[in-house]
Image 1 (spheres, rainbow, N blue to C red):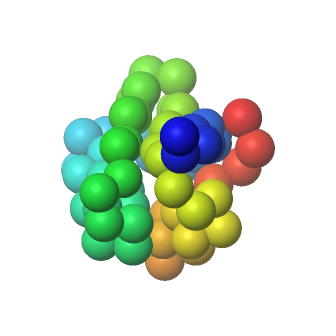
Image 2 (cartoon, rainbow, N blue to C red):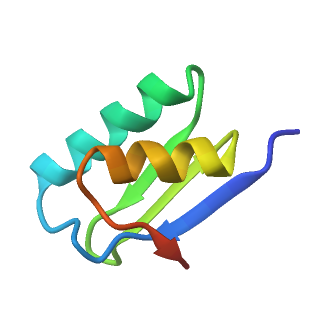
Amino acid sequence: MTEKTTLTVNDMTCNHCVGAIRGALEEALPGTQVDIDLAAHKVSFTGDKAKGEEAIREAGYTPEAA
């Protein structure tokens, strides 16, 4: 089973941000399962944690430990 990572992304403020982060994660981690809670600023995904964090950073956001 693939481990799920949950990060807080406080600079994710709108649905555009959600789309950008989802797209970045799906590109970096093909087949990943992405769950995003905009109101709580939480992003959860399966797969390589380091690759996922880097993808979020490259999309212009700041992931932090949840």
